[in-house]
Amino acid sequence: MEPIRLIEGNVAPLDRVNVDTDQIIPKQFLKRVERTGFGEFLFYDWRYLEDGSENPDFILNQNSYRDASILVSGRNFGSGSSREHAPWALQDFGIKCILAPSFADIFYNNCFQNGVLPIVLPEDVVRNIISNSEFDENYSLSVDLESQKIWDSNEEVVFDFDIEPFRRHCLLNGLDDIGLTLEHEDSINDFESSRSQFGGVI
Image: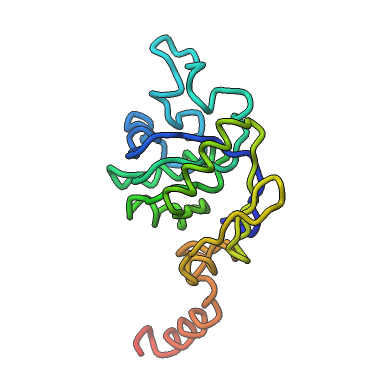
C-alpha cells in the first residue's frame, strides 16, 4: 500500500446522501479476484446510459472532474453491503480522499485498509466545499495528513480534521494488516527459529 502524506487535486462534488456500495460498484462486477480494474465500473449505473454510452449529466463524466482525486459527498457515504471492492473501485479510478459528514462504519474501515483517506467533516463545511466545487470546476484542495489540515487553492487553511492516531500512522507509512505484521518480521523469524529447534513445540 502506498503511503499517504499530502493529497492535492481537483474536487468532484457528488451531492447525494446515502451513496451505497451497490452504487459505488454494482454487484455484477464483483467476480474479479484482483484489486485492480474496478475503476471503469465505478458508479456504473450513474455513469452510463442503457446503451452503454456515458451519461453526460453525471459529474465524473464531465471533463473538469474526470481527473479529480478528491470526492466530496453527503452523509452516510458507503452504506449497504460490506464489499471491499468499493474502495478498490474508487482508488482505481483515481480517488484518493473522500470528504463527507459521515460514513458507514464498514466502508470507513475498508478505506483505511486500501489506501483511501475518508475524512469526516461538519455538514456545513461539506456543503461549502460542494458549492465551491460546483461553482468553480477548477476548485482544488490540499489535504495534509501529517498536519491534519486542509486548505483550498487560495492556500488558505480551511479547517483541521480529526483522525485516529493509529489509522494516521498506518496511512502515513503505507501499512495495511499485512504490513503491520511484517513490521514484526524479525521477531516472527526468531520465534520460528526457536520453535524449530524444539521440534515445533515451545
